[in-house]
Length: 116
Image 1 (cartoon, rainbow, N blue to C red):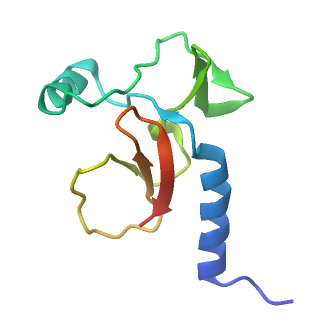
Image 2: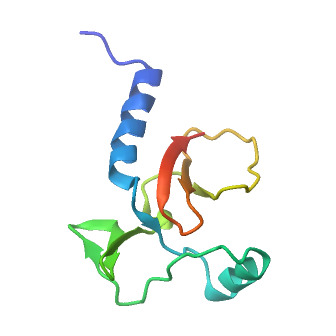
């Protein structure tokens, strides 16, 4: 039996995580003071800060529900880093296949993911 190629494995991983994350919202993953600095520079930035007592969903430590919306806390995803990419924002061209890239609308809702 043939082993799947690296490219096939990467596509399977992309499909799996696209299904899990698309439509969720990105929770703030930085200290409040840093968030306020970013907010001053980018007034459209709307990321939810999860309260300390927020509970994970269905034994999934990176998924939270609050006010009827599902939020993902990127630092808890099982990847070697993450990058939050918002509309109109520049990104670096460094390639890291184990880093997840989360594309979102201005309100933080994930529209697409990629690994690079």
